[in-house]
Image 1 (cartoon, rainbow, N blue to C red):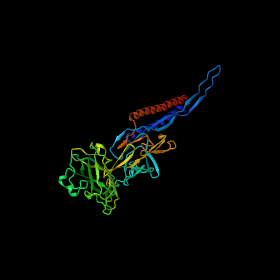
Image 2: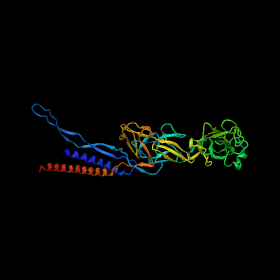
Image 3: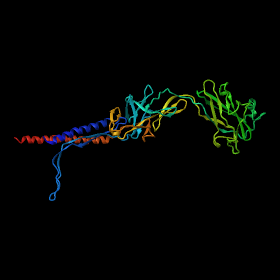
Image 4: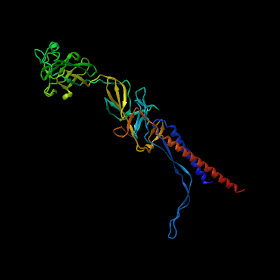
Length: 447
């Protein structure tokens, strides 16, 4: 039999394999994060008809003569080039920009994927929507990421704990043109004197809701009155504090304070340029124990710096409490994912808190991974061990939220390869018919 027949058969067989790879690529042109395959060939063994001879003094060397015996499949490679990103608007969709993989688990078996079409199951676990494999990462405790690799679990109804107020900011202006309060003792006026209409421009009230450790709101009201051209005294109105009468509140060191009859006067002292002289002022902290089971609350008052803080210029009094850092408890309402794969939860109390971070895996040889279906891969002896880390730390890859990676199949290239493969198949088929014709001629020699 002619060697060409067997060479052509090997060509037919392997060109068909290459067509299978091309067909799979085209079938997955819209598969999320699909990585195209590529078939490559190599020459099969050759039959040596004559060995090479060494050159001599009187005669040159002769090259070997060998006849090839066809071709065979060399490899089917996975092409891990970056796919384009498709914006979806779904909060749990993620795409990797870089060469890393998401880490997911089924029971004790670890898989890796580029497809970030995730969702939450009934138990609040972040899973792959294709097969329910659980996304891996690290969880946060009180907003701080810690611990090792674990299932990411974010139940929808979870709460953010309340936080007691520890600081409140007071800014604005105390009118420098206001007259000194009319009182028997301007440094310690009575409640009636503070309420006297004649002192309307000399007395300023500002109120802010503050919170205890249980999230209960208390109304913190500061009463300020002018006692000299560059000085205002102030005190606390206890009406809204809801403090424990057995453990009275105090405003700084000393006895309990009230708008009238304060044991210790506290002052805002201003410089000649209208800014607050903090060193010359007496601005203590407020401490009180709420009624019920709340822990004691201690609040410092921040009056700012320079013209950005509390001032005393002519033009009316606008001093107010601007903000404070406490809040009540809240229910998880939504979540976002940043470029480092950090999941931040938004709660009904306005708090945004870090809840988890998605893990990423890198490989020395990602082409060595084994495809297992469902856009999943597992390690092989030639892929190397997974190097698991987190974006912004152990890997240079980043996470794009509300997006998915598209297939990296190039249709123009695939159709070109299809034509080339088809022609190769036709040529090998023609070689078989031609060899058959030659054998037919050889058989007919006997006639």
